[in-house]
Image 1 (spheres, protein in one colour):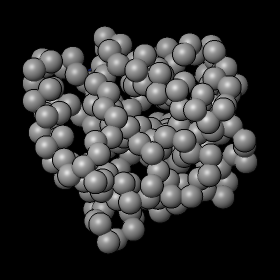
Image 2: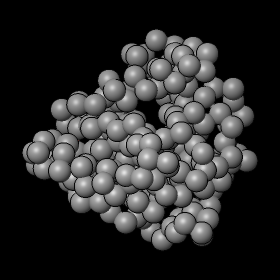
Image 3: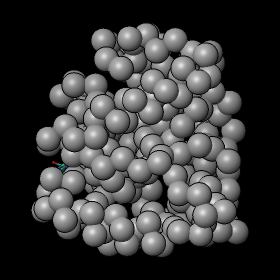
Image 4: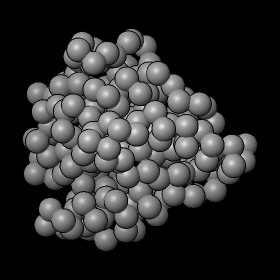
Length: 205
Ligand code: GDP
């Protein structure tokens, strides 16, 4: 998929004020500093698109970008400031939890994980919760260029070991990315294109 246009559309504090649109959403989430803004900028090839989400007052909002006039790239607030456990509803951000559980036109969540770190509890706890919502998701390992491919892959292997056996033993899709080298960019966009096609949406590119 080519990205022909990417424009900031709006910010929403909660699900009720998200755009009432027939356009499908693809959401991006991860711990703060995981490389989410960099990835969004690399995907759209717009250097400072995701900077909008970093403006004062916007970091806790759900930020919508309209891509190819066809689908929404949704930048969700980072987690990492509160504990999420299995039983507790994900109270890291009620609005985000509500969005992830109840947004009808949300087609897929890209969960970003830093490939330079061993498995982090916060990521595992978030995934455990997300898995229970039935929302489709893909794991996106970030910053694969930072040390070495071998280092990134050993962390990814450890992560896979942690989640082996979850969700009936079915591993989610995994994409390894670097916003520095552009690695994984086309794979992320391919997931978007394939998902749109499978649901009979236009891709706009
Ligand atoms: P966010 O808080 O999740 O939006 O993270 P940022 O995109 O702001 O990135 C956090 C830090 O990681 C910044 O210093 C980035 O330059 C760095 N970073 C992000 N992506 C990459 C990457 O793919 N490779 C490397 N080497 N550094 C990255």
